[in-house]
Image (tube, rainbow, N blue to C red):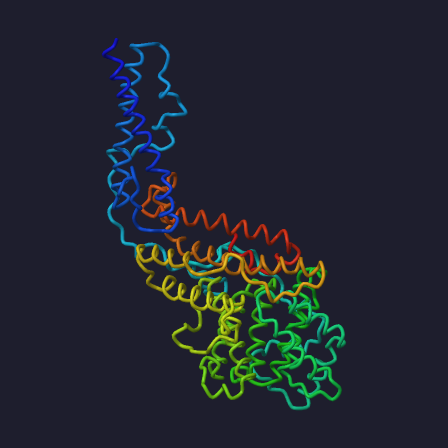
Length: 539
């Protein structure tokens, strides 16, 4: 008996040592931290293993499991010679080798090294009944992969407008070819459909207030001075582009108004009237004015939040056209001569950067390339507090993050030839290290009443989702192709794939993204369903 006790003590110590090593291998804090930061190797820690690849990790685990199982069996045999009571270390809750993770069958052939280029990076190409094709890239939102039922009836059938007006709407974006007398008659019809000044003022102010969290605070005043006043002023000389801009803002205001049902006829009516007004203004393909460029951007926003099945595709085309018109106008270049006209220079920069941000997000949501990269424009960002040594405002953070962070990600990762997996992990680390404030600035929101406090909190949440939330969406699509590959090859245990880091990254980003959407739904649940791009990536 005395000879057995030292052996038991030694065996227990060995089991305990292996048990501790096992815990460090799986749950070591430094190792988990390195996985979360997407490093390609494990950080060395006392008692932790330094492994060069997944195959070596699995072999080491299998060896340890076999060793622990043998030691547990030996301990059980020795314990049975001493007492019928089971050894405390052999309790079910303390056993290291469980049935949850089965060891790799020795007869299973090791998978050959695969070519990462063979992983699906094409996306989805759908053939419509009429023979047309629609393509969405591999990082497009899941909503575009959901099979659609028959398309909804055309909006023209629901819009209370004369047939001749609707026929002119179909000519958009080309110039009207009717006679001058007919053009004047149509123009008068459009003006007669404008709401009273007070109503238009309230609707436009509400529209800009709902979107003030994502745009400059000067946009409303600029719109008021350059569009509303010329149209409603006695003897005003507003042109067709200004009228079109007002009408499309009214259409968006109706669409986002929670007091109106989704797809309210007034929204469609203003939408078609705006198209007709642009048709009367001339050939949109030759338009160089900032009014036309802004119209296309707001037009695209309307298409994106409308119920039309082809709305997102129309929005993408419209923003791409706006980019080309802006280039024709030279908004993408920052000539020093513009400094002689500071107000005009500031308007041009603001128009360009708002358009670039919007177009980048449009392409990102649909898995399609953006119209222009940062290598092809040098327009400076609009003036910001950061230029005076103060912390940057949300707009500066947004412009830099979308154009340089998300935009460069699209250029490199979502091209025809994606980067290697090692490069993907490096991009993952760069995205996580991007200097985004955890709490975006809301200093531009003035507190004058309790309602303003609620509005300030809404701004905070929306801006946070637009920055840190967008980062999680980027990481989700960055790893999605490897996540799918891991599930395909290891459906029961995807973490055993060599793309285990992508599985962890997708899981983490998905959880954070859904939490963000839940918070938004609790705050703006009456508007959130109408702003598709805010919840699109949660499907």
